[in-house]
Length: 158
Image (cartoon, rainbow, N blue to C red; front, side):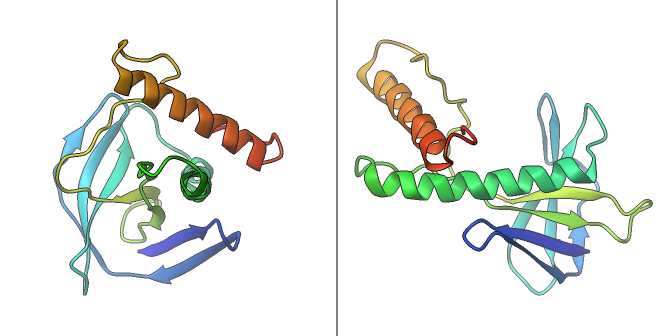
């Protein structure tokens, strides 16, 4: 496979070749994506291939998604430097993999597998409840959205 990563800091794409093993069954499924375990030979890293189950995702959309995730992560790192000390949120790192061993050489998004407990709760500007931690989370998310809008010279909002 050809592995392509985007560096938001340098605004460049990097690529390398890798031998991979892809599991034959879905690890998990959601409303739009299925996850398949992937392992690169020569590493201990376990990653998840994200496959759209509702549509055939175009190569351009995969690259755009990888780029947006890297830009979001960089913006979040900058935000956390000025935010309260408990700002530990992260965007998952991902890459585009061109699967040369598959028919039509599809390009798919691959993310690191996260072990342990983590929250996949969608962030919202509306607090989930009137509990102080929910209200604070909504305010931090609103601040991050404004920060991303301001940092990008009003070009994007995360």
